Image 1 (tube, one colour):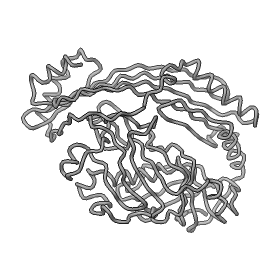
Image 2 (cartoon, helix red, strand yellow):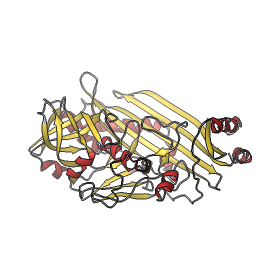
Image 3 (cartoon, helix red, strand yellow):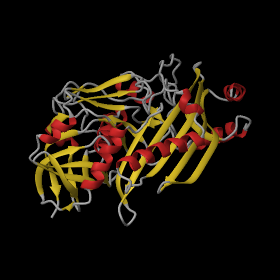
Image 4 (cartoon, helix red, strand yellow):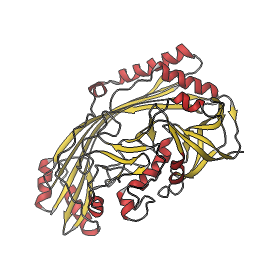
Length: 438
């Protein structure tokens, strides 16, 4: 890689070279039987080259492919792109590699799936979940013309399970995801079984406003909108509702939000981002007050703030080597005065618990608007789940509704966007949200 980059420097004014080596294994178990075992190993390179105050790019799958330089120079000649201000700063020290995950064979992945099946069989033999388990070992290496030359190893472990309806559709879905090894406990599985049983009672709800709890998984659909507004690029372009509101009370005092790329074994944790900027523990909202933005190198210069280490090669729908580094979360964390989950639910006389949604990518995301079909949700009556909510939608705007946050739960869940995880959140109670039902 160093040899290739030396050639880059000989014919350009600067640039950076990004390399990702990745090995993944996965096991799929359907109705208690291993149906698929997959493995993949890949090497990807992305070169950005600066010449005559313009920047071009190209990708390859081999460090021996010198044509990547010629292709990047052609891109530089014909595409107008402002050069990035590269960094030479020292990376963060982050724990994101777990040897246990790295060493797990597909047989061990399958054995973990069988352990989960055995717990289901012990508590409720009639419920046989589908299980997907995977591990990944990744090495990221970045070199740039400022003298930055660093790499890190990272592991990822994921296990998800789905119970099924009598017709074979998903009833309950749950997952664990982190950089280290995770296990569904008997308590976790007992909770999933309880939800599955309650779901057999289908309930319709009336249109109106009522207390709504968003589970940690479902909070990803709302935090996508917050993420779009907290990006310095959106602020600089004047399209963010958070523009010019630093130090102002923008949300309820019950909520604090940070992006922590240094979280021990967090799913998004890493020492530096895909532009070589050290990750950080960035406070964004403290007790409802706006404290900062997420900034890449170029946007940080424009807004005269420090870059936060949040530029990654992924978009809302892809994580491809061709993607240019763009602002995204590492581990978004929602914090507050945590109330035990059971008490938070017990105190509701009539409301809805949202476990998952459909249509998270729809609507005016940058403006904070959402209109989400409730994929899996439960009617709460007198502090108890009484049935699965059917044919209902929750709608609103996060810049209004985050002011209605009344309480924050305790148990963190992985927040999901469309195709990847964005952090962790407990359940969140909103005083009243708009529900479209019968």
